[in-house]
Image 1 (tube, chains in turn yellow, blue):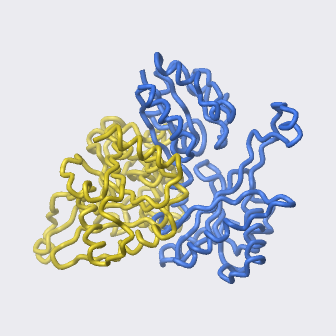
Image 2: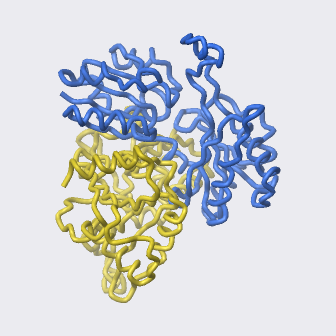
Image 3: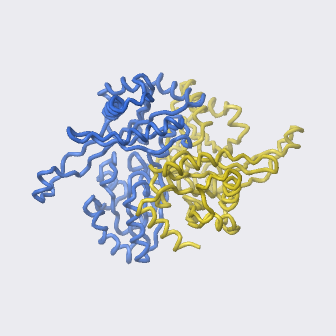
Amino acid sequence: MVLYFIGLGLGDEKDITVKGLEAVQKSTYIYLESYTSCLITPKSKLEEFYGKPIIEADRIMVESGCDEMLERAKNNDVSFLVVGDPFCATTHSDLFMRAAKLHIQLIVIHNASIFTAIGYSGLQLYKFGETVSVPFFTERWRPYSFYNKILENKRRGLHTLVLLDIKVKEQSEEDLMRGRLVFQPPRFMTANIACQQILEAEDNTQSGLIQRNDLVIGLLRMGTPQQTIVVKPIEEMANMENLGDPLHSLIIPGELHEIEQEMMQFHSNTIN
Amino acid sequence: MVLYFIGLGLGDEKDITVKGLEAVQKSTYIYLESYTSCLITPKSKLEEFYGKPIIEADRIMVESGCDEMLERAKNNDVSFLVVGDPFCATTHSDLFMRAAKLHIQLIVIHNASIFTAIGYSGLQLYKFGETVSVPFFTERWRPYSFYNKILENKRRGLHTLVLLDIKVKEQSEEDLMRGRLVFQPPRFMTANIACQQILEAEDNTQSGLIQRNDLVIGLLRMGTPQQTIVVKPIEEMANMENLGDPLHSLIIPGELHEIEQEMMQFHSNTIN
């Protein structure tokens, strides 16, 4: 009996690997991790493609340890599906170790994630420094700590991948206090909002390292058929309200080699 | 007519995505990029799986611009297969731009690469700094520049992914001089050799930042069914001659969170 950790890739139901699909087809139970990431395709489409029902593993299930899934994996082949690659979020290391301690056989089937798909921008993957996450600012909570990491990378000539906040299955303060399991609609930060927050951080820290006309790279819907690269001055990107559906990420480039420059030029010419 | 850039993932013929396989099956010509990376599976196995012949795009063909492939893509669906993800090596940006300038429609099908598969180690992807490549030292050429990047990452508490040298389709100096297209057998640096070279760099630079009993993570055959994580003190890893088949990579950890520590502990207990 095997517990498969299977990456779904970034796009639709056909981005699973052939090996992953075979594992799903062998499995008696199929779980879909649905809270650290967001699948572009609805669950029903996956079910149709696999010809099998899928159990959603939401935040509450994953945080409470997925006991049911692990119990079932002792006597059945079970697939645990994760958008992107199965080990891009820590929670799955935790689950992996718990399963291993129960002597469940584990097989990992990797897939694309945003960490590889960014190569499409033309920037070289080995020249990226620390990755940064930008949280939604609120009225009272506007942390600029992420910005220091961007600056550290820039000082070393390195590119920064900026991941943008996702709020999925969040409860409102009131619902949380009253213990009601009612979820807010999902919110996805867009590249323009991220640029606004970065400019605010620069205005407040006055590093001078990021100028308003510096080019940044918007990564829109990477890994889907609608994947688009937008290259614009950061101030201009901050004002673009029409960047379309999620997910978005951003790259703040460091020093650019000739071929990287050419590819940025290419992207800035072909897409508006 | 479409030119597909298709990632094959890291392991065998079944690590292609369903979408990638469909594109291959639609294509009249299939090219396999065979010089920046190394497929664990022989070409013949891919051909058998696809039911189609594959043309090898070697170093000489890629550097000379793949003219034949681009010419064919004007009037036929063509697949360009790359081990891992199609944009982890720069040469393909170049090819991509040339194809775009010829108005060939381009579709990218992403896949896993070492840059995501390292998540299996338990270390968090966003805490990796600049990636480092370690070249084979020769008697007269022993560059330590890669080591400074490891130290820079370590000073900031970041992990370093260390990619190890691959020599595929290299010509000997003599054959090169005589213009003979004879290739040396491929050579793959193993994790123990990389550790020896890192220790030599530390001995010569005396940074004190890497101690002989610091734990490092050997990533062996990632993405294949034989993928193995080895966690050992660097000095001990340097002496391990039995790490098995390529490809190997290495992680020099920075500061570790609790869950990262646990996962390293887990790997060091389960594998010898």
